[in-house]
Image (cartoon, rainbow, N blue to C red; front, side, top):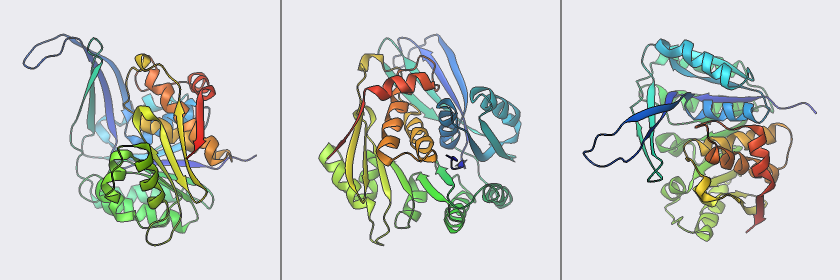
Length: 321
């Protein structure tokens, strides 16, 4: 069976760094060491996840020219050359995202710098690159927030033009980008429970509340149907579609969880990889949750393997609500 082409798009790329420091306290000074530095941004993370599962995809995005060679090289190395990079180089720098872990306290802190402004010329070049890859039946995942400047206009153009070309468009964004397309038809919307609460005005603290809010978002006021996947952290994920609502959870020892950064992107990777191979939505959700769980317990920050995901897949369930 021929696999559908998958393209991930990242408007706000990043350098993701994980730092370990033991005994953190307010006003204190402790020794720290960097244990990981990865080419990041939600779409690039998802692309690496697809590669880890044995798939192939293309990852397009805006990347600061000063770190572009390192970014391209590390993406190629980490994906075993399974990710084709279509990088549009910009003059500005890239965001840096820091995860600071204190293993003794089993706690994490997350810091990030602000993205640089995107100019119209760079945005237009990215649109041109992506549209050259898009065809009917292909999958395009628009991932992450829109940076200031021409970022939002770029996102909206990609969203409209990819749909017009018959692509299956997945959206994993937040803020003004999400608000701008919330009522429009799309193939897949991935969102977390807090974002779901924000856009629907409903409580999402319990499984029942998440299911109800996801069901409402599955068919917005325009009547356009889509699949909605809501991530719930250690509680797994909920998926709503015209066929009903299901939940998926993996059975893992919470003491093994090393970190949760990037788990939502790993979930999206599993879903996209499964759907590109023609799997059902339930199978796709199961692989997504298994991939997120594999990353959570991985000893290598930000990286998981297909073997780890398949081990989690065996204990991952999908049940109707």
